[in-house]
Every structure is written in C-alpha cells, then in structure tokens.
Length: 477
Image (cartoon, rainbow, N blue to C red):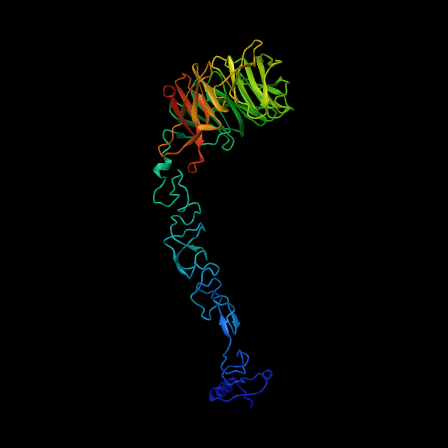
C-alpha cells in the first residue's frame, strides 16, 4: 500500500501496519515488525535486536566522554564507549582528568588564572586554569616566578620585593653591565665602561655614589690616568677623554683603527687594536693628533701601564703561545724592548698585575716575573704559594689580595714580597643570604681597604646587576 505523505506513514506505524515494499522506493520498511525502520535496525529479521546507537568515546575509561565526537554503530566501538553524551571529559587520554569545573580565565597563558575571572570549563581550554595570578596581563608574574628586586610582586605572595631577596647589604648594586673596568688609584673611583648602555659609570668607593656619563659612541675599553681624575675610552675608530671629577666628556678624537685596548699615559692615549694588521697608535690628548707609536704587531689581550709610568707591558698571542711584551714610552711614541729569555705560556688568559714598587709582574697562572730595566726583565722570579689560577689580583705595599677562578667566593691574601699565603677569607654574603662570585678586586689608595666587584652566584635567584663591597684590610688575614 502506498502512502502519499510522511504524516500518513507515521499513522500507519502507530496502527501496527507493516510494509514489504522495497526500501529503494523511499517508504518505510520493517521486516521484523519491531517498529524500527530497516535502515536503522541492526537486524531487521530479528525483532529482539534494536536500532543502532550514537556512541561517544571514552578512550581513557574514566567514565567521562567527549560529547563533540560520536559514531553510529550497532555495538560500542570500544568497551568504554557510552551512548550518553555526558559527563564531559576534559582530557580523554588521561584517566585522572575528568569533567569541567569552576576555573579562572588565564589571559596571559602563564598557567595561572585571575581569581576575579571565574569561568566554567576545562583546564587549558580558552585559557582557563587554576587561580593564583596576581597580574593576569603579565606572563612573568605568577606563583612559579622567582622574586627579584624590581618593585613588582613577581611570585604573587602579596609581598613586593621580598626582604630576604632584596636586602643586598653590605653589597651595593651596580646599575650597568660591565664591558671594561679600571680603578682610579688616586681618587678611589671605580670606572666602568658599558657597551650595552653606551655609557661610563663612575662609582665613588668611599660613598657608593654613582655618576653616569653618556658616551658619543659604544665603548670598547677604559683606562684611568696614573695621575687620577681623567680616563680615556676606546671606541671603534675613535677615542674619548673623560673628566672623572666633573663627569663630562672632554673630547672625542678619530683614530681610524678598530677598537681594542687603550692605555692612558703621559698625556697620550695609546691604542692597541684587536687586529694584528694595524700598528699601535698614540693620540695626543691636547691636539687629538693620532700617530703611529709602534709598528710592532700586537693583538690585544691585556695591556697595563707600569707603576713607573714609563713602560707598558702587554700580553699578546701568537703561534699558540702568549708572551709579555714591553714598550718604553718615549717622545716619538713607544719603543719595543726585546729580550731573548722572556717567558711564554700556552694561549689562554693573559692578565698581568704589578708589585706596588714596579719590581715584579704577577701573571694569571700565579707566576711572578721581574719587571725592571736590566737584563732580568721578564725573567722568572717565583710563584704565588698554591699556584692557583688567578681571576684577578691587587696589591698594596704589604699584601696582595687575589680571587681565584676556582674559588671566586673567597679572597686569598699573600705576602707581597715572598708570595706565601697569609690566609683566606670568604666574601660576605648578603643580608638575604645570597652568595656572590668575585670578579675584580682593587686596593684603596691608602692600602687600608679592598674593593670587590662581584656577580650573583648560580646558587641564588635571578639578579640582573653586579655589586660592590669594601672590606677593611685589617679584617683580612
């Protein structure tokens, strides 16, 4: 029997009538008479078998399903699939994660939400997560952050700049990264060049007050005048003279050579470039005239003005070895002083420091050599007791104070004449318990104090600045 409308078809089904007309004629077919159309019946020849179902996956078997994904099947596609679209699973691959809950909007996606922005949902969906963020617009502020001294509650513990972190006393922070550093031995000033800041910073080590001088060019190196009060700053192709007492740039002169090390001496700036194919230049600090001071090829590693102010010693590299060269200051520039038995060592670090009376050189590998005008110049004299590699060294008339590369949290004090160890002393920790690694050490003009420049040890929380501390010499061994 043919019915002309869907409504008529429904009425027939309710009346219990059955049709045997083929399904391709577009009419109801129910061969087993169970009331389920053949297209939906899982077995249309068995009235005991019902229709297919819509199944929702539960892949992790935790009883929670994914309602947005389904399959039509007569049997469950998996043992744990459900024909009910709830409760919803937030993560169907993790049986420990179940349905939605009250969470908090995480606008900066740092894993912590704003406690004032409550939402119903799953973690990590639409930036929803647990509460705890005290600034949901800054991903660097949340309970997992390390508190640093910046005026912000970084770790969301309701305390800005925790006292145990930010109290660096007795250390005083430095506000700029260091490119090169020197000490005014007359006025007890720390002079720092910073390429990153394109500035020179002068720290009065008696008061810990800083003066910043903006430079016209990015600095490479800095050297303080032996008379104190002024410094020269090397740039790439230029050199500047700076008045340390007034905090001003006096002049900037062209050199025409790449930057490198500079030495302030005898009213001139001596420029030792970083490349072997350039001569050493002398720049007159009154006229700005640049002239060739020496044709000796010198690749800068370190250079230092001798206490006599009449000689420059420098460490150069070549053929896999390092050698200390000597140049005497003369009116025409520099005279290279050659010696057959001068020492050399495998290439590496090459810092040198002087005995206060200029009679000896100390090298980075704890060796001591003569520094004189006679035939003993640059010949071996002895070794600092223990032979530890030096990070930095400074000497007074009685003692030399060193930082070692392997023990930068401790000062070693030597007898400046016989090189024996008088004792050691740990660098002070901060009031907050932070440990710092020494990088440079200088002796005050009167020899009664040691100034240490240090950086935070890896053992402590993040701290962006270096710091200085002054230790009375009488407190050292």
